[in-house]
Structure formats: C-alpha cells, structure tokens
Amino acid sequence: MKIIERAQIEEILAGLDLVPLIEEAFRGYSAGRAIVPPVGELLMDKGEVHIKYGAIRGDDYYIIKIASGFYGNAALGLPSSNGMMLVFRQDSGEPAAVLLDEGHLTDVRTAIAGAIGAKALARPDVERIGVLGTGVQARLQVQQLAPLFETREVVAWGRDPERVAAYATDMAAAGFRVEAADHPGAVAAVCGLIITTTPSTEPLLQAADIRPGTHITAIGSDTTEKQELAADVLALADVVVADSLEQCHTRGEIAQAVAAGAIAEDKAIELGVLLAGEAVGRTSAEQITVFDSTGVAVQDIAIATAIVEGAQRD
Amino acid sequence: MKIIERAQIEEILAGLDLVPLIEEAFRGYSAGRAIVPPVGELLMDKGEVHIKYGAIRGDDYYIIKIASGFYGNAALGLPSSNGMMLVFRQDSGEPAAVLLDEGHLTDVRTAIAGAIGAKALARPDVERIGVLGTGVQARLQVQQLAPLFETREVVAWGRDPERVAAYATDMAAAGFRVEAADHPGAVAAVCGLIITTTPSTEPLLQAADIRPGTHITAIGSDTTEKQELAADVLALADVVVADSLEQCHTRGEIAQAVAAGAIAEDKAIELGVLLAGEAVGRTSAEQITVFDSTGVAVQDIAIATAIVEGAQRD
Image (cartoon, rainbow over all chains, first blue to last red; front, side, top):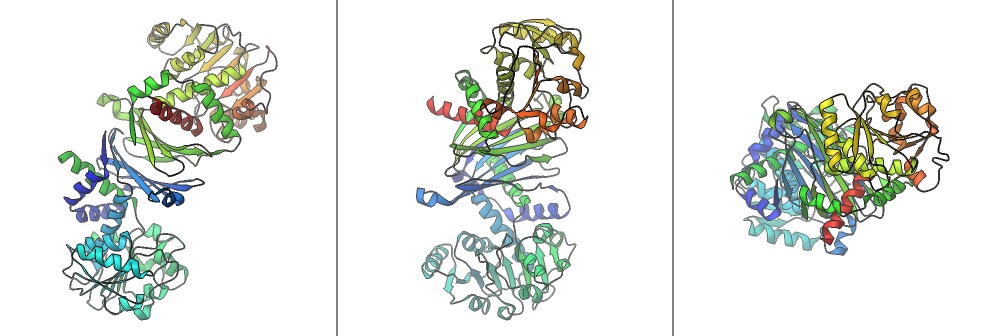
C-alpha cells in the first residue's frame, strides 16, 4: 500500500487534466453506475468527522474519504479542517493507497465541478468573472477556469477589505487582474460568469441584480441553512442544473427555491445528464443559467483514482 | 502519521495485557461514555465493506475501522477478509496512525472479549475447555484463556475431521491437549467452559446437553441468521450476559431466544454493567451462564489505542 503525502499529491495534480475525468464521473453518477451510501458522521466534543465512501461500478477502486473539522485547532496553530482519502481495489478489497491530502483534494474536486458547470453553461465569450467570497474556493474556482475561458478579468466582493486585497494579490500571481466591488450586486452588474463561494445564510444576489446571459456557479450553499441566491434568481433562470438531484432536493440553492415555492422541483436537471447530451443546457446568448454544486462522492472517487494512477506512472 | 504493519502489530500485541483495557472499554460503553454511530456499509459486486467507527469520550483517540470481505479472493490466492484501523487524535482530528492489521486486531479483540466473559462468569476450577469450530476464533479464544484458567485440556468438535486434526496440532504447539468429540453434545458432556465459534444457522447445543455449572461463550452468531445455541439453552441459563444489549436485541443468540419466546428481553444484563459491579453474575458453582458476544466498536477503540501507545513506547 502506498502512502502519498500532500506534496506528492500536488505534484501529480499539476500533470493531470481532471475535467474530463470528473465529467465522466458525473455521467456515471447520473447513469446510476455509482454506489454512494449515506455519509457517516461522528460528532465529538471538540470536532466532527464525516466519512464519505463509494464506488463506480466497473472501476478499479473504491474510495473512503475522511474529512474532519475541529473548532479549536486555530488556537493550537493547526488548520481546522483535515482529511484523507483511502483507496482500495474493487476486485479484491486490498488497500492500494492512503492519500494524506489534508482536505486539498476535496477543495480541488469542488473547484473542478464548478469549472465543468461553467464550461457546460456559461457563454464562451464571457468578458469578466465575478466572485463572491475570498477564500480557498474563490481562488481555486477561478484558477480552474483559466484553461476554459480567455478572460483574466475578475471582479470580487468580500465582507473584509483586507481579505479582498490579499485575494487580489494572490490572484495576480496566478495571472488574473482583480477589481474589488462594493457589494454583490456590483459584481453581477459587470460579470457574465459569477461564482458564489461564501458560507452566507442570507441571499447575496436577487433576480434584479442578474443581467441576461449570465451564468452563476453556486458553490457556497451545501447545507439546509446556507443560501447565496434569492429564490427569485432560480425562478428567473432559464436553465437550472444540479450536481445531484437527490441532494439538491434537501440542501443547497435549489432546495431553498423549491421550499420558497419559487420553482418546481422538476425545473432542475442533473449535470451528468446534461454532459451525456440527454438534456439541453444554454440555447441562446441571452439565457440565464445556474449550476448548484453541493458535492458528490463520485468527484472524490474520480480525483483519488487519478492520483493513485498518477503515482503508479511516477 | 505512523504506518504500523502487521508484523509490528503482532510484536506490540505480545507485550500487552489487553484484558484490563478491554474490560475498561466495556465499562465505558455500558456507562454511556462511548459514541458509536451506525455501521457504514458498501456493497459491491465482488465484495462488501463495513466501516465501524467511534470514540470513548475523554480518550486521546477516535478510531475508524474498515473491514472487507471479498468472496472471490481465494481464487486469487488472497485471504477473503481484510481490514485496517485508522487512529486520529480526538482533540485535533489529526491522523495518528494507520494500523495495517489485515483484520487481525478484530480477531484478537473478539477473543479477548470471550476471555473477559469467561473470566467473569465461568467457574475458576473448570476442568476442560470445550470448543465448537476449528477456525481462527477456536484457536485465539482458547489461547486467551491460558493466563486465566489452569486447565490445558480441550475437547473440540468440528464438521471436518481433517480440520479438527490440524486444530489439535496447532493447539498442541500452544500448550493445549486437544481431544476430538463426535458431536457438539459430547463436548458439553465433559466441559465446564464451552466456546462456540461456528457460523452455524442451526442450533448445535440444546438445553438437555448442558450440565450444571457450565459457562458458554457464544461467539459465532453475530447476525440475525446465525445461531449456535437452541433458545432453551438461554431459558435454562441462570445468568445471560450481552456485550451490547442494544445489538443483542437484533442479532446473536439472545435475539434468537427472545424471538422464539424462550426468554424475556430483560433477562440479559450487559457485560460492562457486570464488570462495574453493578449487576450480579454467577453466585454458585451449579449455575449455568451464557455470554453472547456480537462485537462492539469500543473493543476496536481499546485495542487500536493500545497498539498506537505501544508503538510510541517502542
């Protein structure tokens, strides 16, 4: 069994094109080829642990992902979230690898899902990328768009001006010019591709903010409480896509809009169905599209498998 | 994070006295100090995986155990069951160790639970140890009794005479004299301590087989289908002890006897309560006692913690 540390994982990641692999994982998920049992949860005094696991039928490996959040870690000088992925052979159960990624692969696979949604739904000639939030996803999501869209212009909004400034500096190093916006609506006013990456529980964008032709990738809301888009944004949208219809019935932006009575549950289509060409996405430059990403275990399966195979080639 | 291979695990095990540690884990479990979420299950075409995890409040570590069974492994020259335990710090979530025990620690902790039950319930002057079955538990259970009981006389029954002969040879090397019995009742006729370790789904022992003073440790039945003791054996017993009352309501010998109407659900007491001195076990040499072991995550927590601490001392 291989132990693969974070530095080696980052090195392997740099040589991989994960977009087609994760697209294929979403197609497999929507085609019913994935086995994804309910998430395991261990709640302790100082932190909590989530265990996500599953397999895609016919793949070489199955995956168990352990992700933890420990609230007091900052005081110990440690990151609050941690994690690893375990990779086992699907034909024999033998352990193949432990990926000590400290949660990084989850961040990357989340960013790639956003890029896949934007590639499928946004106008290819989008002039500026708008970002709400200044954290890890605000960085990784935009970086993942670099090979897919020509623009390097970013308009960002965050609650803390210092964090916005730090974000601008970091993204400049990655080749993007970042302008700060005063409020979320100011981002939507000038950007045709908007990525929402905050943990907000109050809507940041209203239907009145959204211009024709806009695509929104909604990343931040992945629970029943979090919400970045007002329900009328999803009502306004011509196309609404979910990574998992099953999950989006109970959590994320679509669940909020359905609960508010703004859209019918069957308005949303599933990303893997769209990618398989079995549903229609954007059909005109004026349409408004939304991709609601809540995170699916097949993304973990695809990225962990790619790292293990990458390590075998090394 | 430490990776501890099976050879090192066996070396550390040899220097440990696990009985008091696992007794303490059972006391903690019965006192409500354990957090043990439902078992995760991943069912695939060629095998299945169970994920057991939990923590004892106030301990240093939490544990995730992965145990797999792959039916076609014999044809690949591999053992059908495999497994590992992951150990994380309970204060920070940081990974502490991966124990690549291939399922051995589960075998050992099961054998130690049996020994704890026998120590608590069997007559100390028992003259012979009876064993039904000839597999791993038939070996380990008896070996774990060596420090607790003086006798080295064993009477064994198994369906396959060749396996019984191999068992006798192996146990002779461990210091036990093994006599073969023709049928399960012949074991019960001469042994005051009986360990049942088969995967039988039909009762092997009836009430009429059991002599006064006998203690039975029932290991084999840990599902809703398996049964080694007829329901009337549990009705006959003066004391019935479960490792986990909650589990024994749905699986194992007690569940079978309750379902058959042979005993009331409240006849059974929990091992940790008995070990804490809050319930009464055997009170006379003539009483019949039964310990029903179905396996509890606190056993895994205790043994994995002991290995990690043993490795730190190395």
